[in-house]
Length: 240
Image 1 (cartoon, rainbow, N blue to C red):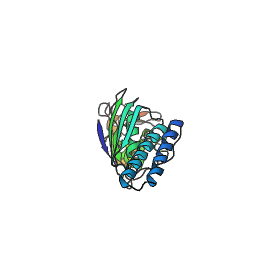
Image 2 (tube, helix red, strand yellow; image 1 turned 90 degrees about the vertical axis):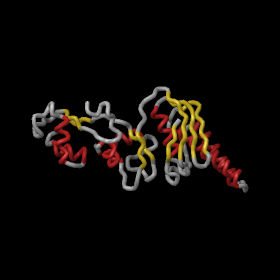
Image 3 (cartoon, helix red, strand yellow; image 1 turned 90 degrees about the horizontal axis):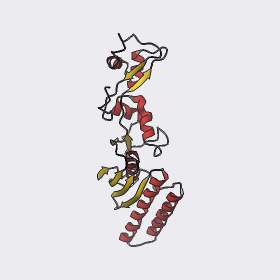
Image 4 (cartoon, one colour; image 1 turned 60 degrees about the vertical axis):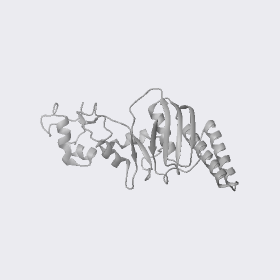
C-alpha cells in the first residue's frame, strides 16, 4: 500500500476519453455529475460528484491503455483510492499519476499489486520555470535525457513542452549514457551539450580514462561514456 500527495488545485479537468470501456465510464460520470446539479441537498450532491470523479478517473486510466485488472476507484473528496492488479510497475505508476493529476485530488492511496515487480520510478512535482530539460539535468545531471522523461509519461504527456506547475511526473531510473564522437567534437563541446557547462569536460575525461590518453585524444566514431549523477541515476550501474 502506498500514499502519494498531489497539488489539489492543479491537474486535468474532468474530460473526454476514447474506447468503449472508457466511453461507458465517461457516460456514467457525466450522468452522475448532471444528477448532482439537480440535487438541492449538499450531502447528496457531494456523493454524486465524488462518484463522477471516480468514474472519470477510471475512464481516463482505461483510455490510456493502462492495464489494471479488477480496477476499483473511489474518491472521498480529497483522496482517491485505487486497487487492482497491474501488469507492470509502469502501468501502476501511470494509474496513480492519472488519478493524482486530476483537479480536486489531493492524495492517492493505492493497493495495486504488480505481476512483474520492478524498482519504482522517482516522482517529480513540476514547479514554475521547469522544463523537461531542466528536470533531466536535476535528476540525471544530463539535460539531453529529457526525452526519457517524456516517453515515461506518455500518453499523459503529448508534447515535451506541455507541463504545468503542480503536475507530478514519473522519472525513470537510468544508468550512464553514451555519445558517439562526431566531426568537430571536443570534450568541452560535448560537455556543453549534455551538461550545459563546457568546463565539465573533465567529468567525461575521468569517466573514459581507460580509452583516452588526454582530453584532446578523441576520434570520430569513438564511443564515450557520459556519466550521470542525480536522484534518478541507478547506483548499481551508474559507474559501470
